Image 1: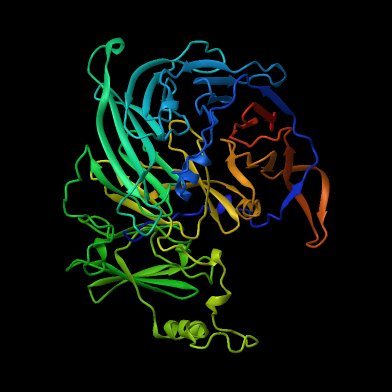
Image 2: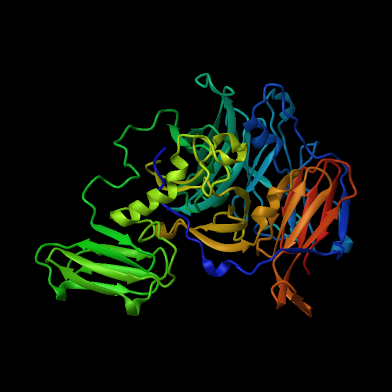
Length: 584
C-alpha cells in the first residue's frame, strides 16, 4: 500500500472545548407504528457465508432506504418482491406503504441469494438489485408526497454473481445519459490460503444510453472495472460526474480488472514525491518556525513574491510558478514574521506561531516537497523522553516515574491492524490512487447523505468526538471538508455493545444509535436552556445543554432498518415500521 499523502484538516471552530456531557432527558419521543401486511425480505446467511466479511456486508445490511431528494420518504422490499414506499407528511394520519415496483425475477432460485438493495441515482432515477445478480434501472419520475405513479424499468440485465448496490450517480455527458454504479460482492478466493478463503470485490459499472430520442433510448453496459481487497469497505462512493471513486476500508483496495482484462501495466505514478532534492527545509521550536526555500540563480529581492496571512503562505519568484503555497498547519502572527535572502541562494522565512507549545507535523498541509530538520538539542530531548520505552527489561520496577512499556499489558484494542485503515481516492481514468488518508486512529462510525447532488458524508471518530467530512472532489487541495461535529459521540457510541445501526439527521441536528433489539438512543446538539443553570464545580453559568433521550420500541423482533430525516427517525422490523418524531 502506498504511503499516506493527505491529512484531514479539522475546523477548530466546529469543536466545543467546553462540552461537558449529554444530559438525560425524560421528555417522551412520540412513536407511531405502521403494521406491514407482509414481512420484510430478510435473507439469512448460508452455511457457506461464514466469514466476518459476510457478516459485515450482508448480515448487518440496512434494509430501509431513505430518499435524499425527498425528505421523510422511505423504501423497503418485502417478501412478496414488492418495493414499497411510505411518505410521511402528518404523523397522526399514516397510511399503508405503497407499491412502486414489483420484482419480476424469483431471487429464491439463486443458491447464494443476498438481500435486495436500492440506490437513488438522481431525483428521477433509481437502481435496484434483486439480490440474485439482476440489476434494474428504474425511471421513477418525480417522487415525493403527491407521486402516485409506478416506476418504469428501462434496463434489466444479469451481472453475474449476486451483489448489493453500495452507491450510484446519474449524469449527462456529451448528450448521453450515464449511470455509475458501485456493486459489492464477497467471492471465494483460491489464492487466500491464510485467511477465510474469500475476497471482497467492488465493481464499478457504467451504464449509458445511445444517442437516440429520449423516449427511444436504449441502455447498455459501457464499462466494468473490478477492484479487490481483504475487507468490506466502510464507505464507497462514486464522484458526481463519474471522474473518480472514494473508498474507506481497513485494508487497501486496488483495481484488478477492466472489461475482463487486467489493467494496462503502465509505469505506476507513485503517490510519494519523486526522489529529488527538497525545494525547502524547515525546523521549529515551541515559539516559531524557520523555513529555507531554494531560489533560482540570480534572484534578487525585487523578484520575490511573498504573501502571508494568519492561515496561508505563498512564496514565489517573478516569472515562475509559486515555489511554496498553501494552508499552514496552524495559525501564525503575520506582523511578527519576517523573510530575508541568504547567500543569494535561499529565502529564509521566520514564522511566529500564534499558539506556543504545540509542534507542527507539517509546514503546509499536504505538501511533501520539503524536509524537516531536527536540531541536535531537539533530538537529544526526544531521546531522553523516550528512552524508558526502549529498555530491555519488562517493567522490572513499575513504581518508578517512567516504567518501560510491557507488551503483556496491552489489550486487543491497543494493537493496530497489520494494514492500517485508510481513505483512498482513485482517479477514474488511470485507476490509480491520488489521495490517501491514514485512518488508523479514526474509527468509522456512519454515512449520511446531507446534500443529494454531492457525495455522501462520512463520520469518523476523532479523539472522543464524531466529526463529519464532506468529500469535495473538485478541490484537490481540500478533498474532505469538516462540516459538523457531534461532541463526545465517538466516546459514547463505544460503550453501546449491542449497537447495530448509527445515523444522523441531514442537517446534523441529532445523531441516533440503534441496538439489535428494541432500544434507540438519541443525542441532540446543544441548545439554549430556558432557565438559569450553574455548574457548581466550575462556578459558571451553563447556557446550553445537549440532551440524550432513550426510546424502547414495543417489539421483540430484531431491527432490520434504521434511517434518520431532519424531523423523524425510522426503525424497521420484520412486521412493523416505527416512526419516532424527533423535531418539529
